[in-house]
Image (cartoon, rainbow, N blue to C red; front, side, top):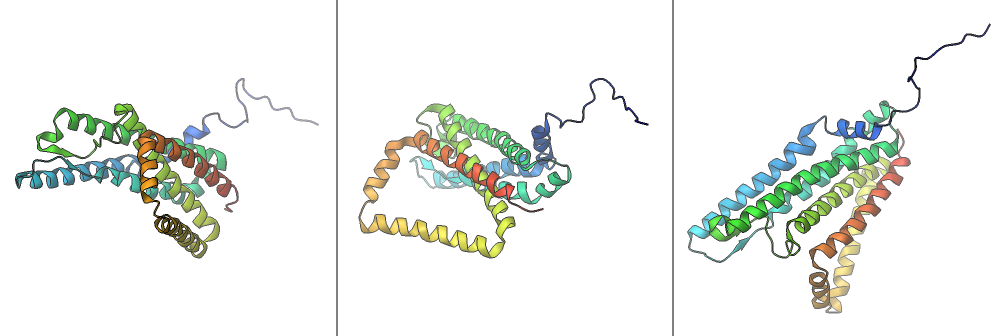
Length: 247
């Protein structure tokens, strides 16, 4: 005898459509990693820089004062990328999420967080322009070179650099799980030596003026577009490495 099981209308055994959004929700389960800590780092760096600028201004220095402190959250996003793998990957596999879904969902979560931090960065820059550096000539988010194409251009540059740092941390964490600490250390050492070799070649050929001229000529948007290309390449490399990661 053959048993026939009727399924209710609309019920299907196919995979849910919003599984990538499910990965986004999974990553944002711990809001500290993707929301509060990046904002805290940005605000803390801004406050410390503002205090330093006030101390310098109170000593009678009237010239504009610039800081690179706004890059602090960028470096933290490399840590966010590593945590996105270490804290949630195996849990996502237990939920039967595919590696493609995990990768795309994690990148989407990072993009949302990076957009939020970039918005705060742009807001601070606009305030600094309106107040002439808070009345003391102190600039944290506003750097004229970065803001050549206005607030949208500055936000784009900051967003792309943030995503690049995230993807690097994401890939290195996957690579570590794939090959272990020894091979990762050797690989990072090899990358550092290659960069030093490139710097040495430029130095021997006394080509630094041409290099700096090319960087300045490319402008911030041009460099951000290059960084965007690297981000896409590294994101693809992350996915290909993740596919080979055993569970």
